[in-house]
Image (tube, rainbow, N blue to C red; front, top):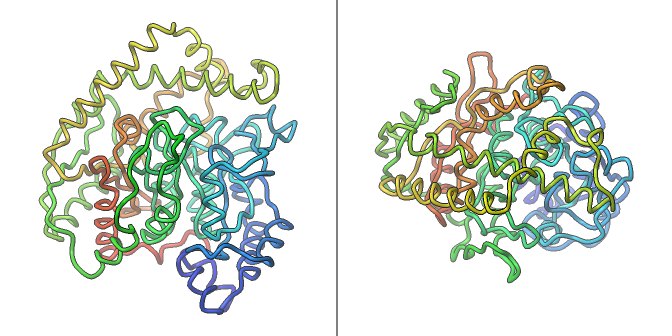
Length: 475
């Protein structure tokens, strides 16, 4: 096969080419490594590559999984594999080249799916903000406009897939960190139902791990390959009884039944960029053309004052992540080893007494219950993914003297994503819109708990009605 064809394929097409003998795993890995060598000096999406290890894996026996022989990148937080760097975007961990000694459960399932890890992707320090410009490894550029951010925290993954370094890359989402890079990089990003993908090491209600992809079928097939909690998971959702890839295929043959869709374009205390509003409205019209009922609704229940409890607990979460890095190092971190925004958040998080923390957790759960009950009359919610199109990287550096002031900008970007990490509902970002100057604008669909199949089925319908697979920022 021509090299010009390989990076234009989605991961499913690459796997099918391997299975048909049209290309070998070694040829795919070499092509990915060449793309990384060519593009990464400008994009800085990949912070560490393993050419020797990837080539050795490609030349040896591979598991007979659905993505056998397909190159893959793993984000530098969450799921990982033995021997890979594990820096979490932090300068102190990078300085000692900290590595993981064992696979995580998802890291093992990634390997069992036949994927070949060729490197690790960039992220903001401890994955805490919706842009990827850590002081440890430098900013990642958006392939659609290198002066702009690819969002975060899976920004390295988003830039790598959008530019064709690999067809699919690991991502995780604790407040929008899969969906926001998907929105700003023109990709598909699914946050699954809480507990559907294994994460036995994590006690957070917020975090979901999966991938960013070029196509809905890649997302469905990857989820089929890795879904199902372990006995040790704190949160556990039952594995779907039918393969989600079959759900995707069925949706291509027959339209999804008529759905009731609540459309939200108001951002509450956050201003929503007109391009993002236009994207949602266009998606609403597209859904109506497919026979669904779309009803505009307000955002008070979702983004009203009661949602502020989520921000307070977010600071406590950052404090815990900074403490965890100190445990890995065997000593406490100092202020000059942590980025100013995270250090400030961690200081505030440490000031939250345990009884107040527990009260905030209960208040958060009451808020979550209210959102789920409010949304129950509808089959789906339709919102912007991000509150703005891709922003300029230079505008997203926190001021060192007052780093907390950047929180308002971060809040505007992620206003529509964090709520569903709290509720645990599945949510997907689709690249259905663009700004007048061609920048990606994602739209978000949210379903009830356990209805990942419904999201993927409707996403497949939308992908067929308004295809995006031929839109590329870099040839």
